[in-house]
Length: 238
Ligand SMILES: [Zn+2]
Image (cartoon, rainbow, N blue to C red):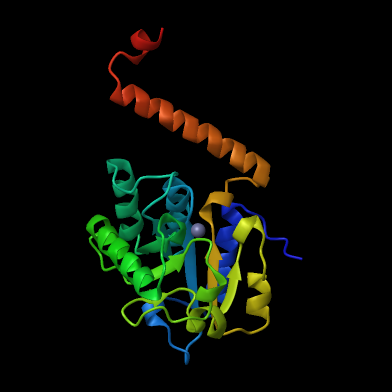
């Protein structure tokens, strides 16, 4: 059904479609059901570099969005200088950086536990962003989080307001479940549009190629870090 390509040009075109159809680009706390609004959301599952590229495109088009970052992931480390500089840039472009929460990092037995862990990660993220963190999106969310107000002290991107009252469209697993163009054509006045920067590129690549490229990049990064952290590495391993 959806023919939208996973390219930067295609994403730019989607942004312009929202813009030209009168959607106001908003952060979660600015939701107003009397207006026509779009929330641009990005879950950063794999790479902050890829997110930065999308953030630049949005800045060029003049739209703001919300980037959700993981605290505990094997794929990137928010505490490195490089990561912090990229996060700073995303914020300087006018976007918001909020919490992507992976529940599998914890043994959570109650809703109170869940709330406590989310709030803890929010405070950690604030140390990095130096901005208030008050929105959470769940990484690989459990169904029980859908349409649920988790807490009154922060916003969940899966709250009923954003998951049902807003039309929810997403390119999860590099596959649009609901077509954002159709949502616009069908006259939805509120859209939450989730994209994963990881899948996009200058030219369209298959999921297979994108994953292969990412694995190579990760290996290169590990190699670079080894050389930075072990003096005379070549000498040592020869
Ligand atoms: Zn995720």
